[in-house]
Length: 338
Image 1 (cartoon, rainbow, N blue to C red):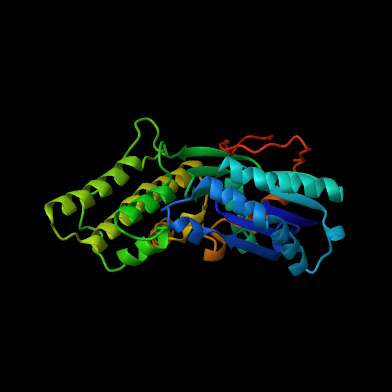
Image 2 (image 1 turned 90 degrees about the vertical axis):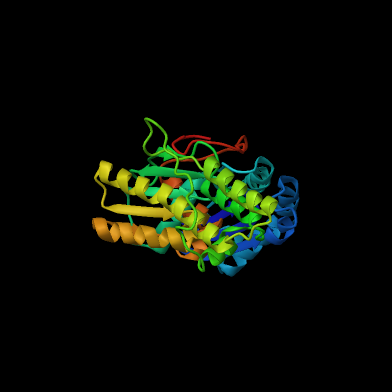
């Protein structure tokens, strides 16, 4: 089964062709990061307009690079939620038009489910059930993945997502957008115990998280040093920040796996590319005797291959959408219909 997949939930326009869920025939991604860097973050209107400019050409390129013709496509999968509403609408409306023109099924996909599915592409041996930490610029959640389309959130952030916190910490440290990689590079030369940073706990919700206090602490440390004319240990602050984020994510995920009795931990999303978080998960899983799956860097960020993979499993479970399909800025991962 050949699925053309479309992803446009934020500032990457992506199109891919995936066969039978796990074989990626093509995976095209156009990033807008340089356009948004001058603003220090994604500008939704600019993102939407640029999706419109390139999405048709990119889809054609994905089909061509897959070595297929349009008539070889069996279905179209598209990210319908969550994300920037204007950006999502570009992808959804393109997919609706293409499905109608080709007379093939349209499959709506939840963006976070797609990130989880990136691991199915990278690791053919991986099958549910498992616990997954989904961490990106817009989402941070610990997910009970009971089956390919049967999932529920065990815990999530009450405010900022981990990736958003990375970007804001990087900005105040004078680093370019997107901030994850520059902050990681800065932290490599720093002492992760140089600063005492807050570690939030949510009473009665052991798997929930909060990053707003951590973000505010970093901002205050930087501004205080500036106001006093003091030299700031930027590398130490970056390293301490990474440690604080990892300390919020890794133990909670490991506790969730133990509570459910799972022997497998999965990490997904853009922040899964962070070296410190990956290393801490490796150490924790080795200590506890659990299997760990983290996708390669090229599948951590937003891409359409992961949408095509998850789209296949959604299709097999009976998911279909008509021309009434809409996009949604927010949506729970366990919602069964769009």
